Image 1 (spheres, one colour):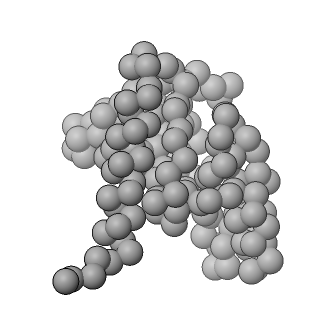
Image 2 (tube, rainbow, N blue to C red):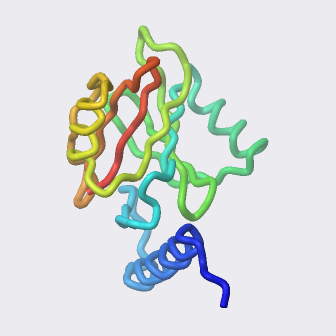
Length: 157
């Protein structure tokens, strides 16, 4: 009998969890992003934020060239946040750059506990960029700058 890898088992578990979460949803559309904590995704990049000097142009380009689908934009104090999906397990948003910011992207990794992961990152040499903040029920985000200067987002309960 062939032994199954941990990654394959995690993928099956993720599919079951995602299916259960989908069945429980009401089917109603909401402008607020929904988040289901999925332990099988811990360590996966599940969100990418693009900071653009022209978010509408970036959105149109990503839709045409990359085939990304977009959800209704979320109004933010600095302009609309354009939510996109590139798979059933990953997506992100496009926002306007801040005045002194260069356009670019930041990835966010799904973690079991955002606060604990943030503290561990600091103990292991990262610098705090954004302390953990709860953005919605069950979702806390944080950002650190890993050794070498790379920004890394953390998201989880």
